[in-house]
Length: 111
Image (tube, rainbow, N blue to C red; front, side):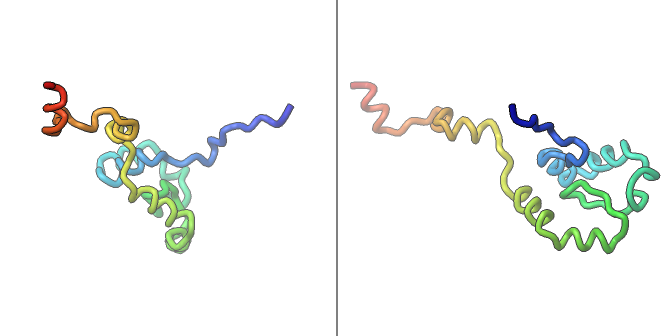
């Protein structure tokens, strides 16, 4: 029997929908930051990357992080449109006509 892979929760960052809500609303971000004690955070919580939801010890480390591959990858993912239920239904062909039928379809149905 192979090794069981456990979900790593120690270094788990916030999900993309949570980060999008942080970016769109400063209230949402302030509520999240209010749940953390400044004394327990690196750099007393002064250096924070919103997109990656990470705290850093110094401004130098934050600037270096923003130049890195992981930060840029996360920015690219956040720029993409979020998945919605409407898009999922359209992908399988549900709800794409929005109740509007073409003239040809109506004529065929009447015959």
